[in-house]
Length: 247
Image (tube, rainbow, N blue to C red):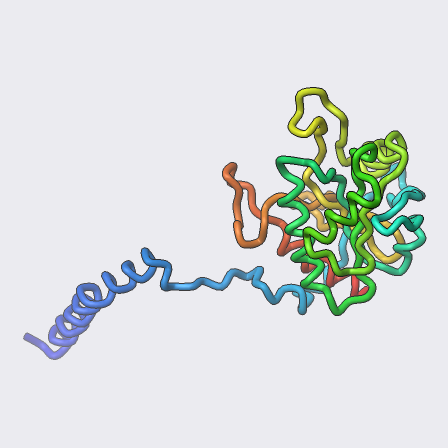
């Protein structure tokens, strides 16, 4: 047998030995969750801007879509308008405190964003209740305390029901409606809108170059996927908030 053939035999033996000894150990570690895989969207995404691509604007009839003027009462009984969010990057959601389905998930995700950007005084959240009859400032205050809200720029807003529905459905195109028989009596979108410091709705674009507009607010970053196979977008939102904060 030539020296070259001996080499081939030696290499084959080593590969076979590796497979016998180490592969079962690796499989066992993966099965027992001993191997931790860091995703590209890690818990550190909030501290780095991964690219220099600017976020898109939502353009309608040739004009960039801006948040409509609004004026409502927050959990502290203070009047809050869109001007209170000037020079701030903020998230918009529509919810209600007695929601038995998606609202708890949405607000837990928002609390995570709050904590993630605690050092940023120019980050805020606007949570508009769609059940303003029940959700008084006192109720909203208790709800905010229950979720551990500490950001002074996170306003839970209540007021004229028709005005809030108009803001949701027309101003943001985020569906919200009172529906008999629906869980809690209301139906609404589980998406978040991202607003820049100048009051414009911003987002990433899809593969065709169209703005995605909204971010899924129901799936947590830890979950990664829901039961329908839809991927979480909270890590994406973290990156995009930072991008706007740095603009």
